[in-house]
Image 1 (cartoon, rainbow, N blue to C red):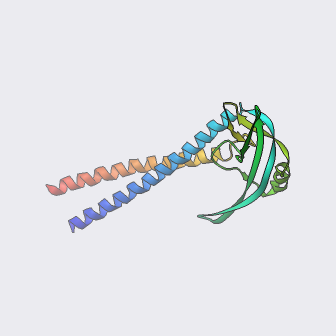
Image 2 (cartoon, rainbow, N blue to C red; image 1 turned 45 degrees about the vertical axis):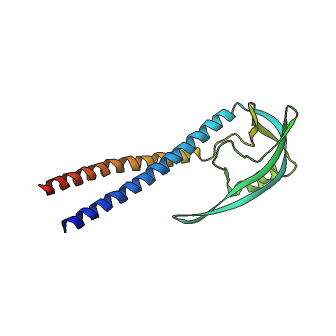
Image 3 (cartoon, rainbow, N blue to C red; image 1 turned 60 degrees about the horizontal axis):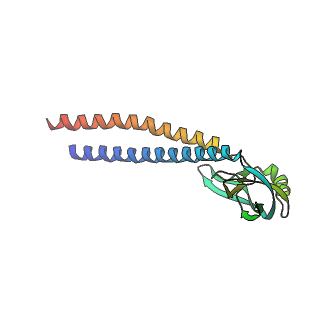
Length: 179
């Protein structure tokens, strides 16, 4: 009886520990993404601009499933060419960060016209590495991603406190049970 209770408590505490690890890891990763996107975006404000030409362009509908069901958003897939100091380059980055920019449904026509095939648009490139370029210098979702990361890390921190308290109580119970 006593050993079954201890085993159940131990498994419960291990389960809580893995959940906290998941929240902490997810929060840390989200925070890392947001901060790296903000850093890239800030750096891109100093990038130079050259005229470039859209080689291919389409707007893709991306659907994913979350806790509320299926959600869709639109993303620009554009490939562009540009020349820096006589060297031609080809790229497809829309924004400087890792998180792709979604397009509101109400702006689809505007974005499609702005980045249509053969359109001449400004290309922002890193002067120290001209392969690194983008069409727009803004970080989509980095604030939201940062908030999600902070919330997940806060949940993990509160959980660690509660987990620690339960673990201390468990150890005290084990010690008093032996005597």
